[in-house]
Image (cartoon, rainbow, N blue to C red; front, side):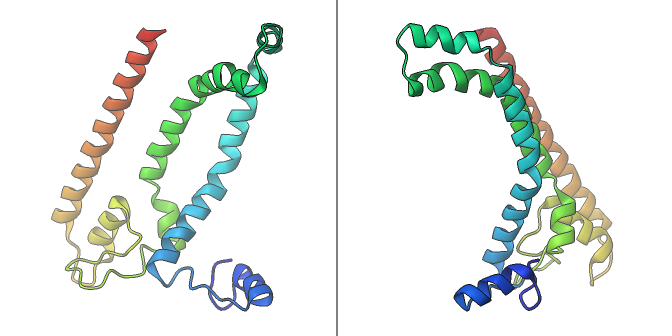
Length: 178
């Protein structure tokens, strides 16, 4: 779909605007394409969770708020958003943690490319730490650098562990507030 010469997106853009975008060949467009594909893949999950959360809010809350004279924006701000965020926030943090380590989309879509000019190791413009580690360990043209790859994977572990501890503490504090 994102191929510059044969992709359906560029075919449509070329027919309408006479425009051909190098989605996977240039750094900025490769990053935009990764974000768009991740949004496309994650949107149904978040939408189902959000719809389920919205349907679980009791209509009585809205009725009481309307009887008290609350307007639509006030009801949304003080009833809907707090209840939805309470249920969806842990899932959004989980989705963030998943995307932080989302090796498959980057590897399958861009392969980490386009290559970063002047880099001493085989790193691409769209590589994350996991795809970079994979390249170091298994795809380096300079040979397999298992030592550097294992060091990067330990750094990834500490980053994810630190984010998890921060999230757990924030949710423990929020739980104590309620």
